[in-house]
Structures are given as C-alpha cells and as structure tokens.
Image (tube, rainbow, N blue to C red; front, side, top):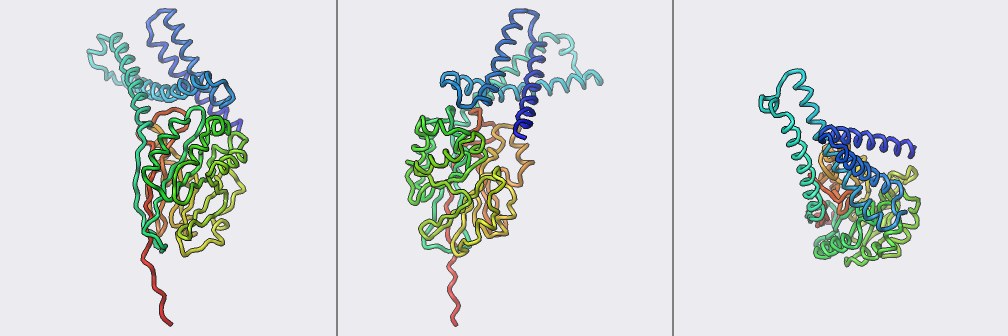
Length: 384
C-alpha cells in the first residue's frame, strides 16, 4: 500500500513537472543552447525533490542542504507555474472558440507572450520570497477558555505547538526562535501535538534538537503525542525514547494528572490501527477536573464531545501550508484550523510552528498558541 501511494505521488509530480516544462520550452526563443540550459536546470531541480523524499537524511549534509532548499522550494514553484500555465491555456481555449483576444494582443502576440512569461516568473519568485518571510514570522495566537470544571488555580497557561518536523532542514535556529517565543509567555505547560520529527532520529541526536526543546522552562513540564511522521522512518520507538530522555514526556494512549489541576490524555496517532479508542483511554479518568486531549489528527470530533473531553488540541493539517492547500484541507476536515466549541468541548487545530518541506507559507501562518484556561464556578455541595 505504501508503494502504491508513493508511485501515485511520483506519477502526479512527474506529470506536473512535464506540463510546466513543455509550456516553458514553447515560450523560449528558438535557441538550442538556451533550451538545453533550461532543460538541464529544470530537471535537476525536479530530481532534487525526489532525492530528498526518497533518501531522507541518508545523504551527505552538503547535498542535503541543496536538496532541502532547492528541491523543496521547487515543488512550490512548479505548482504555481502549473496554475498560471493552466489559467493561460484555459483563456487560449476560450479564445479559440469565442475570439476574445483584443486587437492589441493579436497584433503583438510575440511581445505579449514574452511579457506574460516574464511577469509569471517574477510573480512566482515574489510569492516564494514572501512565503519564506511569512514562514519565519511566527505568530503568537492567544485563546481564553473557561471550562465547566473547577480547579484550585486562577488559570492554567498552556502553550500549544505542533508539526515541527525537525530535520536537517528545520534545525537549531528554528528551535531556538520557537523556544524563546514560548518562554516569553511563561507557560505552566508546553503541549506538542505530534510530528516533532520529519521521520528520522538522526537530526534529534546530531544537532541536540530534542535537548533544546526539553530545556524550555515551564511550571509543570512538556508533554507530547505521536504524529503520522514518527511512523515513517522505522525509528518510532527510538525517537520516543530519546524525547523522553530529553525531558519531553511522550504520551502514547496514556493519561497523566498534573498537580491535581488538569489531566492530559495523549492518543497515539491514528496511523496506528491498534491505538486505543477514546472511550478506552478515558475509562478511569476523573471527570472532576479538566481533561485536555492531545490528538494529532483532528478527526471524529463528536467522539470527544461524547466522551466529555474539555479541550482537544490537534495539528497535522498545516492549514494547507500554502494556497490553495488551505482550500483543500477546509474540504477534508470539519475543523482544519482555528477554534471551535461544541457542547462543553473546546477545540483548537493549529497550523503548526514548523513546516513540512518548503519553508514557505502563503495564505497560512506559523504559530504558537497560548491557551489561558480558567476554572468554572465551584459548585457548592447541597446540604442533607
């Protein structure tokens, strides 16, 4: 099944690149060396993405740096070039049947074609630069939640992050920037909703990324759950053992009570078909103090309402990462991003502090989420 999916992705990727390549070749002047140079660079960039995807961290660091930066960025560029090319082709089809081109275009077709190509390249380059700046500008989102449960504290401040995808691409600089931003908020808890790694243990150990995360100062500790990417590299158990050794408590289908004021229930990712049901996970959990559920993928939200979860925190969607991905995930998930309340259950799905692949966000944001959780009114016991 994994290989079928991989071949499908490879087929789509190759088809997309072939379409853009052919359209680019048609626009170029009839100069053999120019077309040759274009072809070489085009297919090198196309191959770099596949090299990174197939070999992961099992390539020399110098090659990984090129494959990461150029290969990952190329996939975004080629998507936007394909969208622009498709839009132009649709207009050409309409013109073929309805003759919609104005006289200026008909009289200066060669110039208009060159100008359109130039504007298209400048537009895509501008989007890539903007997207990278936007990725690096991590927002702090603040949410206030009042539960219907009472606990002996004015409030609990939890910081939520997700989808760091730590790798040879997301390293010390990003982790330190995120850590400083979290510590400014003076959190009681740091909650990580999965996909801490991209798929490999190597970056966590080689660049001490897990230790850097584990050093973030909180009152009650750092708690995390698995994501789908922890399953991909075959090192899942080693990754979780290393995270635990680094001061990050990984909750896999388990519940922990913090200071008698809140319970954190961590579900293993739904990639594991044998994970506990939510009912099984919460069977022996107290209903007197708040239950915070960490579940990487935001599916079956009604189940959390039914089981009396107070707050569910998820990630995974990246909110599409770059447009039009956000439009797609909005169709895929009941809640693809942001806050929602249903019954007595509060939900937040974060777009993530890190990124998968290209360091580009267009139409979405990198974020940490600060949740100030307030107790409900204490109910006095009725006299006999």
